Length: 283
Length: 236
Image (cartoon, rainbow over all chains, first blue to last red; front, top):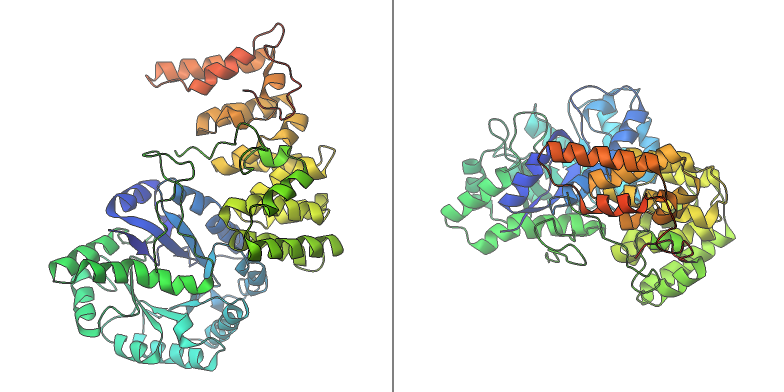
């Protein structure tokens, strides 16, 4: 089984997690830039973070045979802090980098005018750089937040088929699907989605355009939730092909819109590394 | 830890990689690369090199050749990106300011290319801070690029010895260390450091890396076992 976790914050995880993820079948991840828990106070700390997502983190992932790409952006929460907003001026030189496969995560946290501005500006940046966008939907007032998000997407230069709306649940999936956007679900131990509810949504809405992620970070989360969803899908009667579609081909298709996805990592110490690629898969 | 890809024994033989990128003359590197790139990638590289030659130096927040440097991986493929980037840096006549900007604003792949390009672009030791920055990382791909001929020429003995020891620590093959034979020859301090490291490994019940014995043998005084005139500065 090959798994692509399309949203995971590996910066906040240990190297042991990479090892366990590889053992569970994870061969590719996308790491969106996000809020680190401690508020930032200047654009410079974003730049060090972006550099890490383009340097150290892909190296760490490669040690365990996992391809690492990232999405870069000013996150919704810190879009409200005027000390952080100037990082928007630095984004263009980062969005041209090879491993950047989307602008993200952008979207709403508290639905403020500052978040409106940052979301619209970054959807435009995505269009300018021929990148898709990963859009976070808010944890509080979620349905209203989704509707406002979709309004801004419709007014943007980015067509819905180049937008992934994430952290969906039973209350937001239908309107998100009707919008034509890609559908992201984060499976968590306690909050967001769980495996059973995820499989029920797949049974009701089908596997088309659906991406499942662990969104694992510094909070109570589990980087193996993608595998657990795959196992439950099989137990509930989905085919291997359905699992491969949701957990590999859909994320490959979405992030492949960037033209920058390279699912080609040198093998780990278990086998030869010279010229050997384990993954030329995908659609 | 995964071992980084080893450089080919003879730089001009296979696809240049690792230290070979710093040792192969630029015109030879360009012939080698253009012979291997498919049509669209070759056309892209030709245009990128022309642009860089026509508009060298730093312009505004990002020069056109810096954009080309950033996208070289998706244009030429990851196997050829390092060589393409070295050629673009050379075509742009990147000076110390430009190299520092590209390094500090670059991905790990771009930083690696800057390190490989140093001996092609700078005669003096001005870029040592970039080499020392790379040597502080734990990214074995950056470490391998940092111990090329530029470091062999300019690193102080203390920094150079620590670079060799760090290769042993992190699993970078010492074959990546340019001019190892000449610099290690009769280096009693390096021999002491290697001996202490071997003793520490042994005390912990851990194996001593094979490469350690290889370097230790090179530190012996007396006439060198091989001529230091190897054009590629690589030991056999």
